[in-house]
Length: 193
Image 1 (spheres, helix red, strand yellow):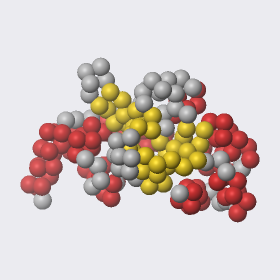
Image 2 (cartoon, rainbow, N blue to C red):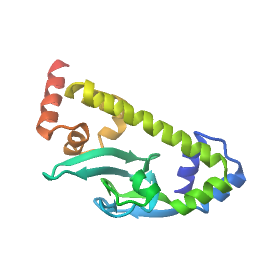
Image 3 (cartoon, helix red, strand yellow):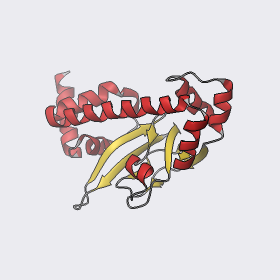
């Protein structure tokens, strides 16, 4: 699993052999079974997790019991309740596995130690956080300016390999509408083709 992580890091920054050896010492591996929690709302998020294999979701549940998915995390993605991880406050998100998954995880103490021991990792994480911010800004703009059909098409076009792995009710939750609305959209799209 560490090789998957190192390969993903190498896509963003150049690592020496010494950097790679050092990085490996800061991470622990964890396997999750389908439907197993990595984090539950109200707990403090103790780790930043890299998805080496599998598929996870981060979500919260409102007072009416409706689930709202904020992100899906598949191979090469990082998942966490970042505010909880960085500040130690209770998490507002649940994170669980949609598929059996394998993760590489780092604690906040080790995260800080890693960025001091391997300075290029500070740049790597800055790039990740910048990309995450851009993604969230685009998702917010989509939520307020696109139709339901446009939201679905954007997701399907940007992630065709992953969308096939995600149950339709979870896709609907992520896009902010009901499974019935998603079925209607898919039916209308099929009729247009």
